[in-house]
Image (cartoon, one colour):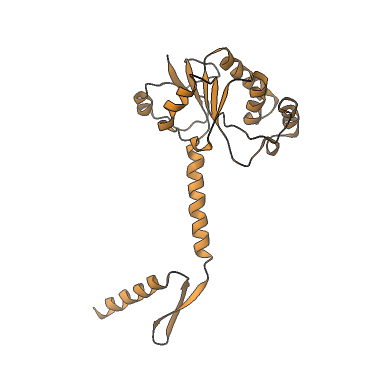
Length: 211
C-alpha cells in the first residue's frame, strides 16, 4: 500500500529526510488527485507533525478521511461571506459547528475519498473560505471522517506557547512597584518579587567598586 504527501500551495518547507524515514513519497507540484493509496494533502504554513503521521495514515485503514479541528471557539458562523454561509447552512442546517483544517488532510484513495476531493474542489468555486467549502463537501459526500485534535497543527501550538509567554511577560510588567532599601536612607523601586535580585545586583556593584 503506497502512502505519500501532496503539497498543494504555500506549504512550509518539507523535510525529504523525514519523509524517507517514514517511507513517504512527495509530490511537490500537487493537485487535487489521489496519487497514493493513502495521501496527506498539505498546504499553508503549518509545521508537519512528522511524529504523528504514522497514526494519521493508520486511521485511513478505517476512515475515509481525517483532518484536525481548526480553532476552538471559532464556528462556521464566524467566517466567510454571507453568500458562503447561506450556502453552507443549506447543507449543514446549523452554522454553530466547528471547522476543520483541510491544510492537513488525510484521504484514502477509495470511491468516497475521491468524491470528497471532487466535492471540495467544486465547492471552492462558491467562495474564498476553503474551510467552509470543506464543511459543505463533508455534508455532501458524508464520508467516514475522523476529526483529529487541534494539537496536530504544530504551528498553532507554537503560537499558543508564544502567546502564553507574552501573557507571562505582560503580567510581570503589570506587577506593582515596591520600595526596596539598598542601604541606610537609599531606596529604589522594583517589581514585586524582584526585591532580592535588585539587592544582589546592588551588592555586586558595591563589591566591584571596592575591588
